[in-house]
Length: 135
Image 1 (spheres, rainbow, N blue to C red):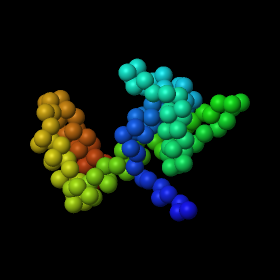
Image 2 (image 1 turned 60 degrees about the vertical axis):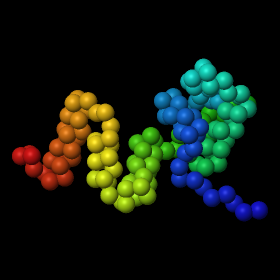
Image 3 (image 1 turned 90 degrees about the horizontal axis):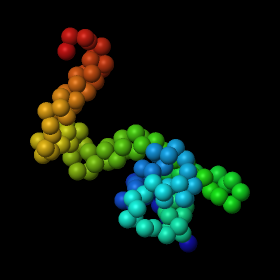
């Protein structure tokens, strides 16, 4: 039997579970389930399966305490965001990050406050990269 290729990216459901683990720091199946939306109404066995899949994909690790598994993310949210956005930039925006940012700024209903935050982030980045204070 062929070994399944490890995925670098999360499915929508896996991302939902990882988001809860990132917020919790670590947790059991029940801890994660408690943080899901009440209307999610997911069976314990289904939630346990999703966490086991995340462990097989090496997104999480577990330790056993008695009969309970405690799960912890192996990848930070920041690291995953970077990986995901780099992939989107490469595949959808011809490896041109400026095109990705332009699409975000042009097509979103960004408030003046949000645009100001983006401008401040860019100015801070430019200042740090050049070592100049006169930008």
